[in-house]
Length: 113
Ligand code: 5GP
Ligand code: ZN
Image (cartoon, rainbow, N blue to C red; front, side, top):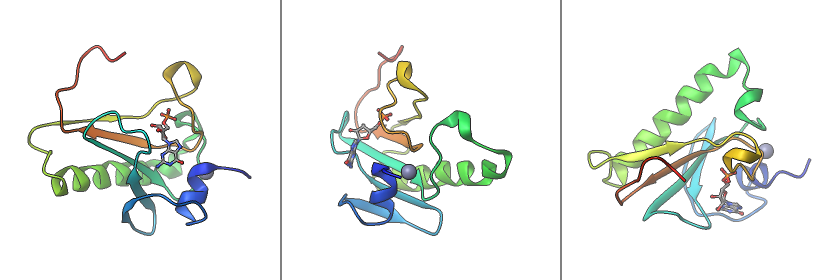
């Protein structure tokens, strides 16, 4: 299976990895949309949010905890940050391995584009 983010998780494709544990990897987005733009992914391949199973509930919670840690480590937790997970093409999803976008370091606008 050709999956870009599985390859990053398996170190078969280079990325600026800033966090890793048994379940998750976080790395800098190649095309950042904010001063902080980190992607948090599970090591397990899950194509979209719609493919989550009940057994993945703890894993998803863990991704949010990792995002919190990175926001704190980067010093943007108190200022604020945005977590985004796109699902399917109309949302803008282009990589079909779920990922949390952790965006911060600037004022975010609402509604999102
Ligand atoms: P999506 O549009 O699927 O929600 O987000 C995919 C994100 O992955 C985009 O923000 C894009 O810039 C990023 N991305 C795509 N390919 C690569 C890559 O090879 N390396 C890294 N670090 N980020 C990537
Ligand atoms: Zn994958």
